[in-house]
Length: 377
Image (cartoon, helix red, strand yellow):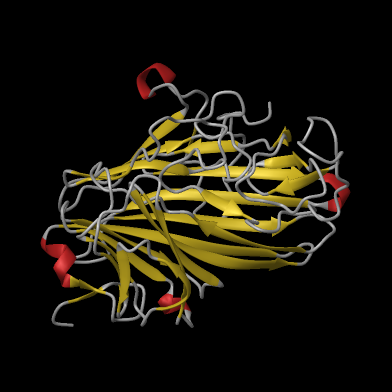
């Protein structure tokens, strides 16, 4: 049953795996209670501001919230609620589950420019793609896609999904695990595990956290050389547009390779700030320079109007960093380079820390390390 949202068998493996005694295999999700699209509700431990709560969409080839050919189908955190604030949430006026960017929250993509086997796949006839023509290639987290013609791969193009990958899903109160074993054409194969988990603060003054942990193993006969990033569609409290009071901060002095500021944004030291209202249909895009190490792989998105912020941290040095903005979301994106010979495996984690009120002014991006520095340290 390709793309089935449930039916885990056996204990979870990979990052964050738990014992069978503390893990419950989910056989069916209560769709009537949760809405049109299959999804799971997670609740973190109680803490200052209350418990962190998250809604996570589930992969489902027939009914899933996202069924496009671009993003990994698993673990899309659609919404997080804490301390009276709503993080992420809808970004499109009309939702289309087949659209390449028809997602919200934390969609992730492998191979934005180089999916597995695209260049070696035989193309179909010239012109618009006709389903059934052309050989297939592999998009990790999606499945086997068909190459329609001899054009270059384009992330924002919709490709026919010839075979969706199967998923095993295991849910707990505060965590959910997704597993996919996929064997594609011409020796391409992998095992992929993703765990989304909620946790309390690291210490006094810190906010509650959400982690997305991933493990990718090359189970095929060809080297996997590609990349991965999280799009991070950060919207806060349903604000309709980006403007003055919105900013994204980094722990290093910002430089840019390219910057489309649209006349409403600029670089100020370690921050990209909005100085005017971003118009409908306009987008801001900046390719960043100046990062060098794992401690630089942090970004904090702040809305002064809502009095809330999200800090996003990657646990390794980024291969690339960009900022993208399109109402109502401000998106810091950190890329991870993947180079796996057959049989090799790698793991990497993204941590999200949520803050509100006085915590925003006390957080600073100047101190390296896993914990955010606070005033007086």
